[in-house]
Image 1 (tube, rainbow, N blue to C red):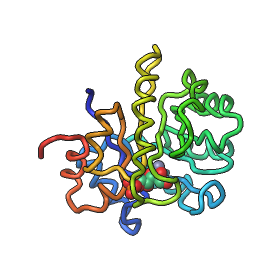
Image 2: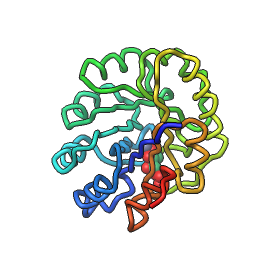
Image 3: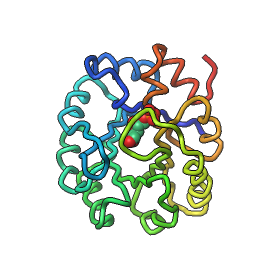
Length: 219
Ligand code: DX5
Ligand code: ZN
């Protein structure tokens, strides 16, 4: 099993101190910074736009991983890449022209990913496999941080790992929603390459310990 990469979700940080918060997780060994972009249409919540990414870009060297929970992803691709995003993930349930969207993300120089809601079947992204660099498995209903992990959605990970291992092209598997020290080992065991976590990292004072615990490392 390779070492899982950890992506703290900025949604859960103290937004009054975002620069300090981001530095704290970077210093604690985070691999990526995850941004939850919500439009109040695809999901019942509103968060932030490219402005926050551009600001964080100035205080961190970590890759910015942008999770678009929006009805119209295409119009946001360019602004987010211009703001420093290196990974852009769109929902299979929201994007009607996925092939074009992935091609556009690559053309802009970023890495494309596809996200699946908890009850969206694995088969819905089989054809997307050659065009993406990562799959984001949602283990909560997108829209809010701090929700309870849905075990049945996590079960999908094993099937995705089998699909990954049967294909020549390596696609990374990421898990997002309710990830904590109680389920991280199980998720890593099922083949997760990236663990996205908000509350489990920003909700505790010792970020180094929190990140190491998610990776299954001793501190
Ligand atoms: C939910 C978001 C998640 C969320 C994770 O819509 O995609 O990234 O912020 O937060 P926790 O780890 O608190 O569930
Ligand atoms: Zn997310």
